[in-house]
Image (tube, rainbow, N blue to C red):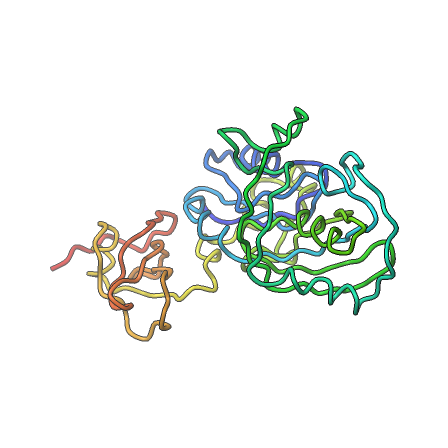
Length: 305
């Protein structure tokens, strides 16, 4: 195996790029990336993409993520977590699971969210966190994000534990900030664990603090095949002629029976190997190559008759 997805349970303190750099050194692979940054203080699922699997980063980052966040109420900081400078403190109103559940309702669905200053969002060619470290704050436009669900799991004032399922670009720290503002007391993230990225969960993960001790062969044994990143997608298998045409960038006929309204499919060749991502056209009757991978070898090349 030379390509795939390594699911890492990132330890607190290090950055997502630190994990990427460590995997690159340990496996001696040049092309390594990740699908969704985690704050240095956060832990949990970090999907590391290796080799040809790096081509799937845009598709994996689009998938839903799940977090378990411990929020501390009664405080506001410049980073929206406990590492930042305290800006304000206020009494915490009586909190129960029921009252906090009611307070979270406006934050479920398609919502507008202002990114934190301490974030990787660009502003005039620079990251916001770079400006924040210089003591600068610049206006940020609200962005639409999708929050599928917020479940209040436990309330132990002044803290509460929430499980959040959300889409791409959602900042849990910003959710904490806005929820605290709605309650009139402020709130920050005390602890954040990402429990899922798309199909990958903590049960799939190798601990980040073990990567430096594991032998390369043991790390490769934990690497999932690239197509696992698209486990929830429709899967199609082409015949020999269509396989060759697809690999040459040609649009081919789609097999029947695809779900109505599907936009993308994971495409497999006649030999069973994963070929890449196809875009459905003509109402799902055609498959156009959108991203071709060379991680799997579908067998000897078969030329069309």
